[in-house]
Length: 115
Length: 109
Image (cartoon, rainbow over all chains, first blue to last red):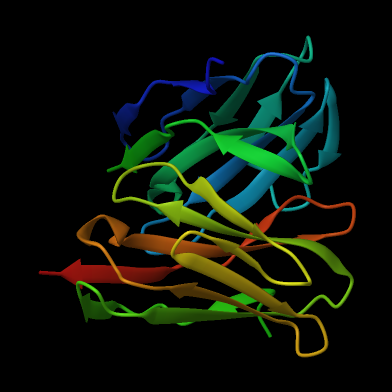
């Protein structure tokens, strides 16, 4: 089974620039998440999609972050304009089913450095 | 009170040692519990689910105490390859998984 694909793996930008990250979840997984992981901290949920609808975006800084999943498969996360504190790894995850539990599978992440 | 709290460590132990990690959560309505493992500069991966009756997977044992809102992970006979960050994860009903900050384990020879 192919895993969760993310790109780019690394991105360096200057503050006030924009950046976009792409995610392709595991085939058939209806639920997709974007998490932000700052160094030394656990992943923090930014947004949750169920198919192409938003389930939870309460922690997404909507003045600068946006995300979409137009066809219920791939998703993009955009930051515009970026701030220094946005430096983090952006993890995409999709939800599948393992006997007895839902299993969240992460992609390798997109590491953003804002200078 | 933070939703999921863990002792960040680091825990530095020799090979063969037994080490235990603790985690507390604030939402008493939480339904599912997990331990994830994260290697340096890698993504988190599911280590094991945590069931009310407690569960064991080889050298790893997870326990849940709903009354105290407390989860634990015990690692016996530590190996060098166990060095990683261990993330306590809680799933309140109807929401996404909530992660703790993680506990760092370093096993030395």
